[in-house]
Amino acid sequence: MKMRKENKILILIGIFLLIYLTPTLLPKKVEIIYYNRTLPSSYKFSQSEIEIPAIGKINGKETGVITTLKVSAIPGEGRTLTNIENLLFWIDTQYSIRVAKHVAQRITNIDISKIDLIYTIESNASIIEGQSAGAALTIATIAALENKTLNKSVIITGTINDDGSIGKVGGIVYKAEAAKEAGAKLFLVPEGQSYVTEYKPKRTCEKIGIITFCRTEYEIQKVNVSEVVGIEVKEVKDIDEALNYFFS
Image 1 (spheres, helix red, strand yellow):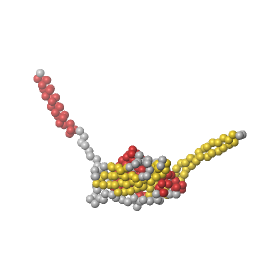
Image 2 (cartoon, one colour):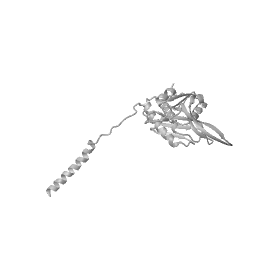
Image 3 (cartoon, one colour):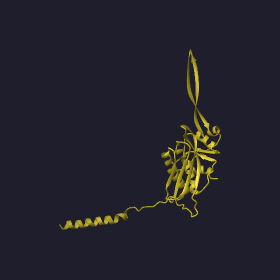
Image 4 (spheres, helix red, strand yellow):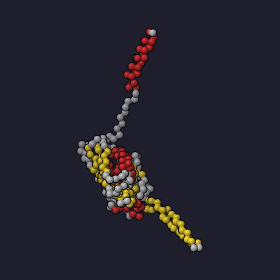
């Protein structure tokens, strides 16, 4: 009976030591600070504006359109706010904005924990694809954070990836036409997209007796976007390269 009491006491002591010492034995929490560029007291919260070419629908017809994106940086709590009306591209756009904000933070190295970023997109189209605006969203965010003015004669299309690289998009010719119509002098596209592939139909017919047999074949052609549309086109592989054309 005596041994049982001693065992109970030892067990209780062991439990007490385990509870007391466990916190000191566990790995300590390590805080990682990714963005260490603090805002100077003279920092001016600002707004940037950029035009984005897209494929949209106007009166039910698919065409190249220009949308206007405004990014405002104001005192806040690190929130991402959107002001989008009459547009059905919520999912794509939200994803692109998240990635754009992440890339912009890395490039500027600015701590935005006390900055709210407000994204406003204006367009006459009813439906617009969101991912192809990723590169423009990133550039406009950087301009707003750094209070810089963008070169309005330059327009860009392309998706944005987490590493800052610019991904391919569709409708390059339509978007180039929209960029030219908007007055742009330079159209930036993802790598490998200054030329597009088109399929030109070729119809041949052969008459056998009283019956005429026809068939259509499609020839693959590489088309130079710059020559077809009449606007200067340059390929850019990532945001760092694209910024060289926007900040003069």
